[in-house]
Length: 143
Image (cartoon, rainbow, N blue to C red; front, side, top):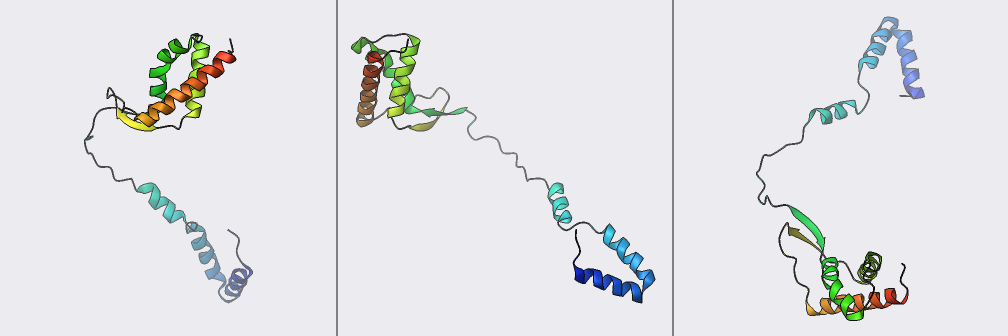
């Protein structure tokens, strides 16, 4: 750490007055920890408090996009109704286009728990997005 001019002047003055005391002061300064070292050492010594509490809900949870599940559920009926190609590429294009039109609706559900049903307004949005996607893919298939 750089010393200021004032500190250096004080040190020289002290050296002139007490030549033997300067060596002790320098040794003391060299042995002193750097600023902030004590705080870092204290943080390193401290361990976070851990509490052993059994999990209240041991079921595995997952974050699921309910809109994605609805689109996948309605995919085959829409493909049958609009006589669209059923290859994997076209199906994926339809799903991607439909999901890009829809706002995501994420929910946290337990494994094996049924997904919440969408209301009529959301169902209508899903069907409209699917129809638009099928028409677009049917007009320009990428296979």
